[in-house]
Amino acid sequence: MTLDLIIAGKRIRLQSEDGVNLRLDKRFTAFIATSGGEPGLIIEVKPEKAIIPSETVKVFDAQHVEETPEGPEKSGEPFWEVATSEDMTYVKASLKDPVRYPLLIIPRGKMRWQLFTDEAGTDTDPLPYPIDGLILYFLTTINGEIMIHGSGVKCNGRGWVFTGRSGSGKTTMAGIFDRNGDRVVHDDRLILMKNDGRWVMHSTPVYRNDEPRSSEVDHLWIISHGRSNISAPLSGAEAAGLIMANCIQQNWDGDATARLVASVTDLASSVKISSLQFLPDNSIHDYLMARENTTAETVTAASLSLLEEGKQVTVTAGGYSMWPTIKPGDRIIINPLNPEKPLTAGKVVALRRDGGFVVHRITEVRIGKLSRFIKTRGDAALIPDPWSIEMNVAGKVIEIIRGDKTLKIMRRRMPYLIAGLAVVIVKIWQRITNRKATSTVK
Amino acid sequence: MISVSSIPSHSPRVVFRRINDECLLIPLTDNIADMDSLYRLNETGVFIWELIDGKRDIRDITARLAEEFDVNQAEAEKDIMLFLEQVQEFLHFREY
Image (cartoon, rainbow over all chains, first blue to last red):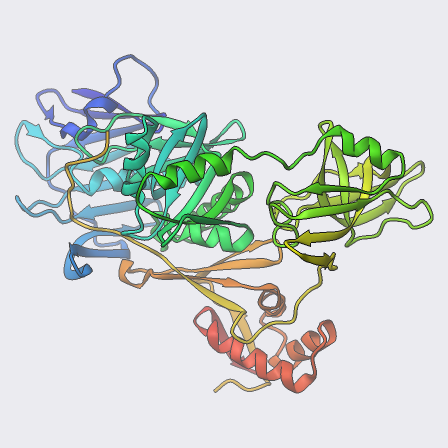
């Protein structure tokens, strides 16, 4: 028997010998392919029992964790384990009710795997929990894709991912968007991957009525419950660390871990990342709708022409790219360029872009034959802007007005901080549980 | 016991990822129960981390830190010791 599943755009073919029926749980029903195609992965399913060969090394161990009202509690019983030999990875699960020990065998670099289900007979369930999640995990690590504890919605054409520690409100958030008629991609577990330069989220089969859904990702929010709705942008290692903490990961394989953190770093530099404290009611929906509809990072051409005439202009900041030097709502005072004073690294300038301008900081100046070239970057941006010629600079920022305070533009300098600040520990929120939820938002 | 003549080197059981001026350190482990934290180093931490090469002793690293930053030798040494203690699970030390 042959059965194709399409999960996160990947065609996984389950194949058994004639006379062995593959019995899939209802959570996979909507993921079964209805048309033909070439599989990315073939899994040969055999109902026999197989054991991990003795000449292997055990590299990872996971025990049962029970979800109790007091939080997760380790029972100490084996749940699944990983062993490796030079060219094979073996993954064994310990299932109760009835007791059986399915074994997944992954030859290194090959897309034909074997699965011994340890369920003698002519009818076998090839994807019991946690084997299904483990297959997806090992499949996503090959290309450094991200499996994350998170909910995802598509609202007003924008894709938002909500991630956070257990109990932070991911499902609650999905429920709020669902009640507002927005599309919920999934409310528990997503696969994030880059397609043609854009990050995309995909649903995964977790619950009975799940179906394949996906959306591009515009903003990822690290959520927690709060006393009001409030968000702040995150960037760099802080953003990447907080995302990483919510990824499904097995950190025994340095190469897989390196691929994951590289992808997370890319995600954190391609998609907006913010922390978000929220109230579990409809006000968060309104808050996010309002917040995401402000696009004042570029301002009108009117200010540009004033600068060209040698006049000082004041504009209101809308974006986060210069956080924390410039915050949304700050008023930015921009002077025309003084030809007597060449631009230097550290200065914040208004750079012409798309009919308006963006305000970024100069990180490097190079002198070419015909022009000086400048490299710029938003203080909060991971990736610098492309080089531009000096003529593209419309003006220099001289002051920031925040509320009734006037702030001077500070040169960004390397701080000397070690004690207490050098090491920030980010907790990994692993949730390996044997909870099997049956309800979801749809 | 770590002293200024100890020579630190990186453990192979950690994944280092530089992100702008900062970095993440992710410990490798063989048990899901131990997988509970990852670490973020600030610019100064990364500066020290990248000086650790299995050849320089702590005295050398201290001197380089004091050269680069506005800090005196004694203060730098105290801070380096504190830093090394915080990330010691990712380091090996040998005496020259």
